[in-house]
Length: 424
Ligand code: ADP
Ligand code: ASP
Ligand code: MG
Image 1 (tube, protein in one colour):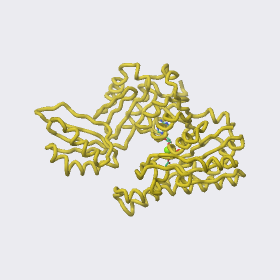
Image 2: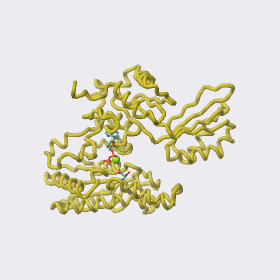
Image 3: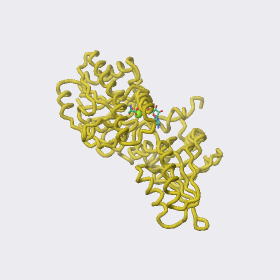
């Protein structure tokens, strides 16, 4: 008998029929003698619908007072889900109780819409488990020191589940979703993508941070910090398959790097369409310029990703960086009003139609020429690289958004990641 955390995403919770299926699966695990904590997301489309309603009443939604209300609204999606799932479990003859974040409580800081979990009190949950109940806890939400409801950022139910697993020292955290594991790239973009039986924690962290939304990055960080045994698997297998078979399916996030060293140099390809590029043209090439530009951006609490400064000509240079697309208009306005004057730059150019494509693999540590294969592949497709950034286990390029799928497919093929075709 073990304590296991299950997480079910929005599609898996998308209708009463699917919720019934989740309940049957969870009840099967409970009947096998396990203690179950289940963390569901809102039903698919619900969080978008709620955020859309909020935007109708206040399109800008920038200050803390507004963001607090946004969290109050967005968190209701998960509250509906936990209640429905607990009812479905009871209907299966499995005692169950639901809690929202503040009832557990899962406490967070007050960074509305992107709060971080500070602590989880598991007393109440443990009492229920001991009494033979399945405990269903809302994903995505918590409560701050003021008692306000907070949310953890889009995709945050993954993080809720892993954090609960860490706090309760669960034997395993199973992330049930609408694909049957982590693939070499998003299988919706590249049908030839292959499922990985295992992926190293380091690679998963990069894939998540570079845009693979199969796991929210903070969930992977939690798993690493607390060594949570984490597996991504399908919620669409028949609910009554044998537990042993189910427990071996999908993709396991591993912490042993050595296992992977013999494998592919590049393990996966990630992409992100959520960024925008800003270029400050003709800034005087003098000490402190980067600070003047990026300091102002940071002071407005805007995260900057890729940064490139060119060689100077005649004492002037161009300075480019990317921000999240949601922050694009705000950053442009900020730079226009302050930074152009402050730096004496000639112009400001923005481009929201870019994307970032990245190759990821711990094998890159010990192989040279990986980045050049990437650049050659893109050049053969006639794709212009606008920015490049590298680390030990990844290389990212910023390119025109319209070439994204072409680039991902070409790189997937070039690094030998395509699954062998059936005809072969
Ligand atoms: P959930 O609602 O279950 O949290 P998400 O939509 O957040 O599901 O995440 C699952 C989706 O992630 C898949 O449907 C797939 O399109 C996408 N995805 C992106 N990159 C990958 C990848 N490398 N492997 C598997 N799925 C990926
Ligand atoms: N419902 C939230 C979202 O759509 C959280 C999640 O699904 O993980 O982002
Ligand atoms: Mg998700």
